[in-house]
Image (tube, rainbow, N blue to C red; front, side):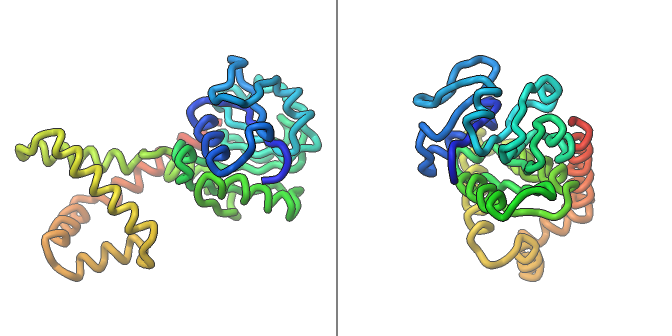
Length: 255
């Protein structure tokens, strides 16, 4: 990451991103905060106004609620402006900040553990140096991809923005089923937590895709296959798709 970075908005997501940056080695003196409280959520970081931050920072990340964007007073025509504000389009970010060089992204609270997935798309005016900076800023908190369709940011807001998000919903259903079968709640919770930890590690590091794992287990025709086929017959994949679409639509409308 090059230069001084300004972070406007230090709520749950903003603080998580800042923690990830610091853990990745960003010196505190190269990070500035601006927020409504005027108080730093992390020690050693200066808090200032959005206007002062814009004058002192080459790169600015907007991390405020969508409802707060209309009231943001920020003139940053010379800065690279990045945003993880749900629903805020590149055109709106350009209009709000005065910068032609904007990048729209979506991250997650997993940034605090440097495990976030952050897709992003830039405006036509961004340079190769801006791309390098965006990749550095976002890879410091996990994994990142430049994407080609802005509408997909809304999809990823639903898909990977909430952590543990939809994975927690499925984990909860599994734990509840175990409890309904007489398993003590603490043991059910511990078992499901370990399952998702191990499954996440395998999916993250194995060469096989999630789909390949599923089809392989179905082909094995064991106990797991029986469960998969029952869930498919009950419409699980359609239910998941409908839920993600509803969340995507909300992400699109919220801005």
